[in-house]
Image (cartoon, rainbow over all chains, first blue to last red; front, side, top):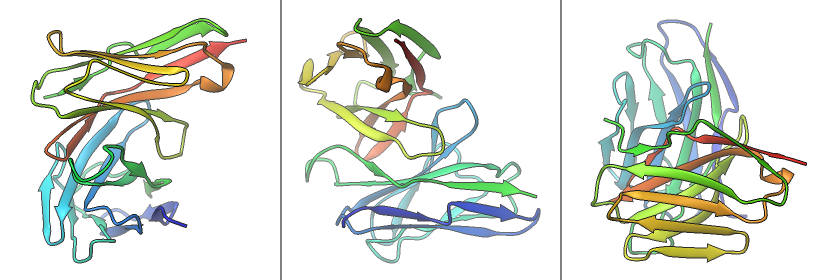
Length: 115
Length: 110
C-alpha cells in the first residue's frame, strides 16, 4: 500500500530535550513538507524539500531542523531552541509542480507535548 | 506575512443547501490552488484543485471557482450533507512552496 507515514502518533518531551519526528513516504514524491498546527489555527509551514539534500525554510523554521538524505524520508527535529513546541505536526508529500497531480498527501500527524 | 487568508472562521448551513467557502491570496504568482477537508487529530484530505490558468473546476458536489483579478477563490458544495461538517483549508502552491489558510469550520445541520 502506498502512503505517507508519521511516527510516533504521540510524543512527550521534557524541556531542554531535542526530539525527532519521523516521516516516510513510498509514493515516489520528490517534494516533502512539515507543518505545525496549534489549537484552532491553520497549518503553518516549517520546512519543505524539493529534492534529496536540499530544503527551504518556511515561516516558522526557528528552533527546528530537517534532513533529506533519502527521497522517502524527511525527519523533523524539534530542538531545545523551540520555545513553544507543544503542537500537532503534519508531514506531507507531493509530486513536483508539472510532474504529476498537484495534490499533497498528508500523514496522520504527531502530537508533541512538552512535559 | 500571511499569503493565504480565510477570513470566516466558521459557517453553518442547512442540509441540502449550498455551502460557499471563501479564500483570498496576496501573491499573484501562485500556480495551483487546492481545498482540503480536515477532522481533529487527523491529516487533511484532498478535495479538489484548480490550476491558475483556469477559472472553474468541478468534481461531483464540489466546485472551485478562481477569480485571478480579485485574488479570490471559493469552494461550493451542493447539496451540503451532514458528513461535510469539518474544517476546510485552502492552499496555494508556487514553485512547490505550499501555503495554507487558517481554515473555516463548516457545520451542516440536518
